[in-house]
Image (spheres, rainbow, N blue to C red):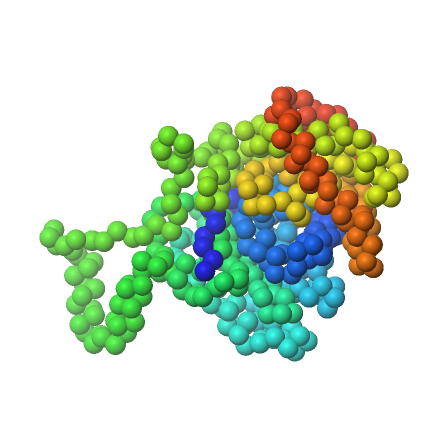
Length: 429
């Protein structure tokens, strides 16, 4: 049974993604999805979408703001635009969206069922149940406004949906996956992303089994008796014992055991259970990334001989800056779960639209898309040499990372990126 894999604070951001970035996100998102399917299969892509930290890293490598709630909307919109036109070949369909588009999900699922032969009524019911659980059974103060249902032509599915709390200016993202799912009402989430904002009602917890049974019994009670009981509950006597509500999220603690409450000046925290908290500030700081891993990426790009890769990638003059981006893209495709505990590091592939950690280098972005596109096209006709070479970028990074020192001067790295921003076609919103 899938378990909750992470908790994160997502500052609520508004606004739109400009067309120049949205189209690039569509193309890169499609290519990364195709690469994962080519290497690991369709079900694995759904598993990745169900990992909150991988999802945040995925959005960051695509040039979105590395920490914000906007990653959810923009990534799922990019995937829907990128994957649905090739869904018949790839076998993955993206339904739903934000606002009114979320309500179109049942109709879209029935249409997919007609094309593929999967059980459309089951998928429609599943979609509704996921939304009901996160909006009603888990009463955490966040109102759902986005619901995406991703399904394969074999019937496997994942759900990514997000709620907002406008008063707190915060968002919470919920992840579901069909893999090993046995129950929709007993700890069904693959992951929940959002800040813990106090006590909540969580009827999906395994310890709430008796409560769910009691609720069913109450529906058969005499209404007059129920009203008498409710009045007593509203005005409890001093002798009554009131049971506390269950908290869906365990507190994030520091290594010394003290609770951690992150603010605008604090770094990202990730603990052993995939939990992380995104700060509200925009800038990326040294404490937000694993400096040894970032050092490994930069060493792979700037200290290894690009000719080791350009001969196989058929990319004469492949520069170290493109190699830096491709190394991080390769990690998103091939990395294990432990590699995604610092999503901010992936913004060093293609920057961020808000200018943090640096403007989006559109020329480098386009080169990354071109190289990845070429690798996939060759793989489709049985020539995996370029794809295997891209995959080896991650293996090379891991080998270099073992012996390299943590990045010594984080600020100097940012200065280098910003100094070359105009040369690399840097753009912001």
